[in-house]
Image 1 (cartoon, helix red, strand yellow):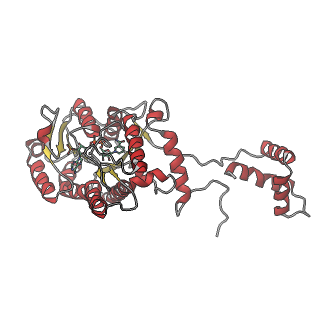
Image 2: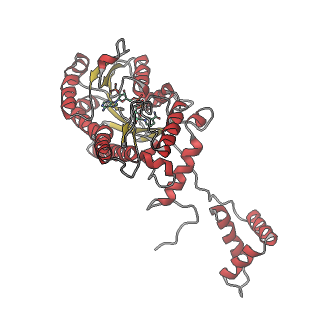
Image 3: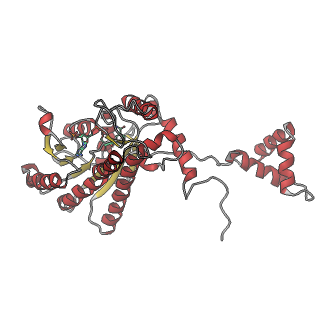
Length: 375
Ligand SMILES: NC(=O)c1ccc[n+]([C@@H]2O[C@H](COP(=O)([O-])OP(=O)(O)OC[C@H]3O[C@@H](n4cnc5c(N)ncnc54)[C@H](OP(=O)(O)O)[C@@H]3O)[C@@H](O)[C@H]2O)c1
């Protein structure tokens, strides 16, 4: 029974209950008397105050169709992890257009000759690489000359995909560790290492840190069997979401002035799911396929189709730019749109259905209805 009908029924019961009839008898009568029940419900609904009893998703979608920049980014310095392709590359280009000096990263900068902005080597899953990167980026003339970093975009990431039941323990536990380092621990290390460099700029008026998390960070994973193959990715993104918001709480309380946000895209058309790019928690062949496991293979096909049909990376980039150009940035935003074609490309209907189903499985679900009586 949905909440709307339930609300109407309670109203019907309240309006029409004869004193000799218990509420249970009345409800039984309403349910069994078919057409009469519907008529009664309709009458009661027509007479009742409108009931706002429908739970629905209301994402904070960016980029906004109409947006008035409040902050000029010209002359500022941005560091974007994972700037070699996809969302990071598109965001770097958009920031360059706004007059920002952009430093990106790649595990293999040499594989991107002619890249539109500097790429420094960084592997988030390798502590030595992180230490080297932290030293190198802070010694860059752009950063030294600027007195720090205006914007740190912790964007790099990989899908982590595979069965929730270990098929091959080595692939499973190794994959979980690699996913956790890439999606969570590495970002914590980079952020900690560059916090002073961003704080130095915040102290003179502008310092931002953004984390690219994901819509999956808002799900528990239990309502849609297919999403179980995402579990390590979900865990990594949820960890990063928690870290980002905890850091924001601390920085705000300490009045350090750095503004911290997370950007949570729906499906975006990038190479995230392509070939062997993901971290795999179970064996795959040289093309990133698992023909021995038809269910996983079907999932891989679906997730690759979903990203291939996803939102343009340049669209996602505008969400970052708007956030960075806002004087008071939202702490957490989604990348998507209510309107087609982007609502289709972001798969809003699927995301909404899964989100609402998962919320009902939460320990703290939101329900609609009259205010609870005081305890
Ligand atoms: N596409 C989507 O649908 C979607 C949705 C929600 C969230 N996201 C998130 O958006 C971010 C960007 O992904 P994308 O979609 O743009 O995918 P992408 O095209 O595959 O780009 C991923 C970027 O991350 C870098 N990277 C991967 N592993 C790394 C590591 N161990 N250390 C350092 N850098 C690493 C890659 O650089 P190199 O390979 O050159 O090292 C690349 O620049 C990720 O955090 C992803 O989880 C994507």
